[in-house]
Length: 140
Image (cartoon, rainbow, N blue to C red):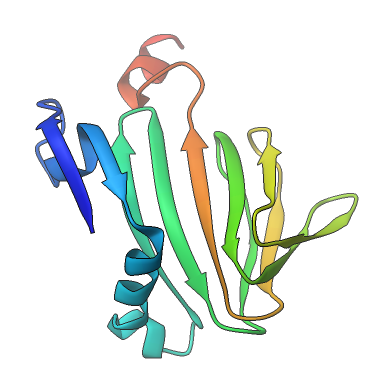
């Protein structure tokens, strides 16, 4: 579970995701994901947004062994931190295996697949250059 203090006023939907201070027990969050309907579906994964600000997001993903997230990209810088298990990232020019405790950062727009070699949990942190979506569009 998490605690939030002093929720940000600019996000009216789910303001607890944008508190000034957020604190998580990742083991408990993984257990909660295992209880979700999405965990029982054929996709082989379940995810939960832990933090959501206009220019920054953190998502916890739990994947079953041998499940995949097919090629995708983010229009933002991302980091992927393996909390548990082993995942394989297929990048344009290489394939990288990441075990528990490993961290990788990708520049905006890099295509990648994610495959869980075994049941795995990882954090995806997304940071949009130029601030919030509104601020990025104003700069154009």
